[in-house]
Length: 288
Image 1 (tube, rainbow, N blue to C red):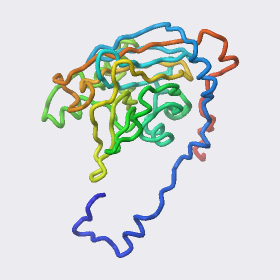
Image 2 (image 1 turned 180 degrees about the vertical axis):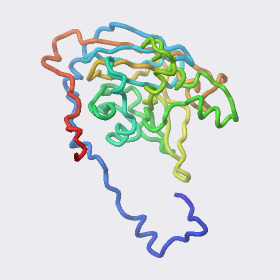
Image 3 (image 1 turned 120 degrees about the vertical axis):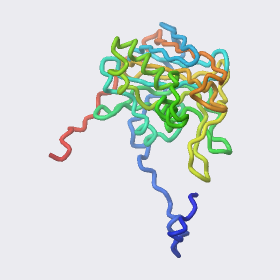
């Protein structure tokens, strides 16, 4: 709780005001529900069609056709990753972390979806398996796979280090990966790099000051986070220079490890007549 400002003492009814019960802004029961039974049946028999190794302190891109799955694996040691997603044919339709957070909460796990930006606002990917779902929330209020952190970036690093020039922040890593994939200059694609899903990262807010914190990730080799691609996806994943984020990020000192991305397809016809979700049907008139 923030302390009372000395010029603004608490009113007599402060306790009553604070005791007002919260209201969930977006009740999840009204969202279009993913068909988890269908996805579970499909993931029983999956075939790997491509793999990408993401080196430490670097990022790599990958593509996932709609109706396929992809997995992000911890391989050699505890490592967190910053994930961006775009529609593979339209960089303007990209992952909207803020709306995903509003719909599902600060941290994602099995059954939660990654939603795309306005005006599209539709599911891009659904989490279908999470080997860290046992973690829940710890005594500090920390949990894994957050949509509250923005991604480490060279601009904030420059401010905090009084002019430092560090080029392996996740923002820069993702920018290089997208530029390479799109065949475009860095300056042209940087604006399409966006707030991330912090895969495997353990984070929360301090209860006394409300500050964003990180702590050592519980991820270990063999853990993975699995997604179903609801639309054709272009992804980019950065192996964060903070390693397991137990001490710092934007650093060449932290122990860092690679991450593995697998793209998989169902080997049976279990998907049947499944179709990708359409773009949002709001008419975009905005009252005019």
